[in-house]
Length: 210
Picture 1 (tube, rainbow, N blue to C red):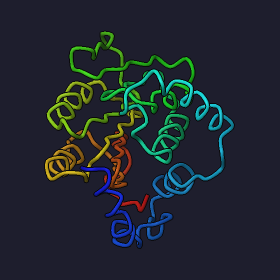
Picture 2: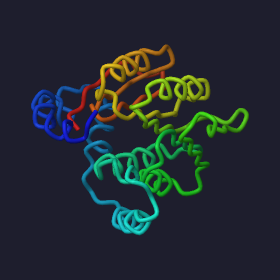
Picture 3: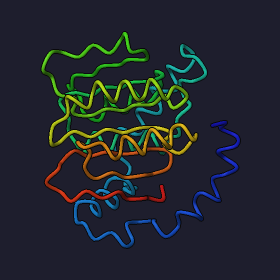
């Protein structure tokens, strides 16, 4: 989706999702906690300022897509990784400043970046604890990376998919992904889709006004 068009649509998206703000109507303790204490968390982490500085320093060396994600999205990725505390992080898609946030949230995690399928090298038997899949302009890439990584999930794995509402094709991809037999609770934030794989929790799909 064109970024200018998306910006123009923002007020209407917000109004359409208004009743889904701040966890209103959510009865699951797990989902309510995630929405209020991770997705909507507003307390500034001590690393935020440092990450902004590092991103600015690296920007001249990068192409124009380096800073394409909003600060809100990058900080949410940081909070999600901090919440999950993964041993392995897979960053699949266009390389961008979000990589700084993914790495900083869990220093020492085994981080794998792959802008192409040929770069998706995963150690034999190693689980995918956290996946950030961001290349909505290539839905076939999204589908294939998901297919590869879904076989490596554990009860505590979390997948984050970008642009799930940006195009009709991505909406179809998200519907298929969220209904996968291994998928548990999902969260639709419009810009992002979040999938948990703990099947001990009742399967439900939440819309969040992010």
